Picture: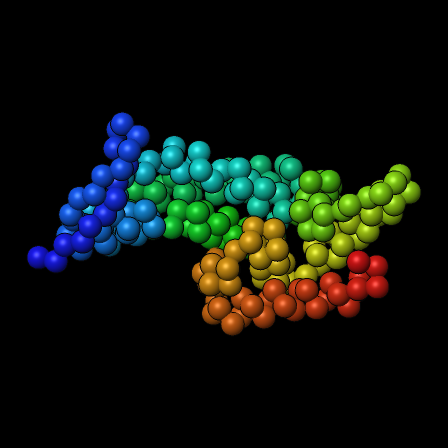
Amino acid sequence: MECVNVDEATTSGGWSTRNVTVQELENSTAIRRGDASALPGFALPIVTFDDLLDRHQAEIFRFTLQLTRNRADADDLYQETLIKAYRAFDRLDGDANHRAWLYRIATNTFLSGKRKVKREDPLDETLEAVLPADPVDHVADFEAQDLLAEVQRFVATLPDKQRIALVLRKYHEMEYGEIAANLKCSEAAARANVHEALRKLRACFGDRI
């Protein structure tokens, strides 16, 4: 069995050298990278629904705010998302990407509920999420806020998939593959949705941004 020498820290603060097998070294590296689930006999820690909420509820709620632009509708969408997630949680694979799964539920719930009457009450935090402002003085601050409001209203008119793709890419920093999984489309289609949304924004506001 092939062995290698590795240096390890001791409890006294010094260092010692010991022999380990190549397999042990690869296993240790996989665990540090977060790839331990691929190791033979390795069991992932059990994730509870409460764990899921602790890790992701804040960003999922921000996402619902960005989609609905209204706190009351965001609360409804967020609660419906959590209810659906709770009901389906026991059927979820143990190695599933929980974050992406929650985003998909929120997206699907939003799209399926678009027939609801929209409330037009944009939040400052939502506007800043689309285009953060960096005002220099009071006059510039007012102008920036006016521009943000215009951009927010324009984004709300985008086709649903372009709007969602733009928010996921520019605010939640998702990769195109994740956006594609969220929207149930190809990666090329996800990229096209983001680029088309940005093209429309530049065409409308390019001389002011």
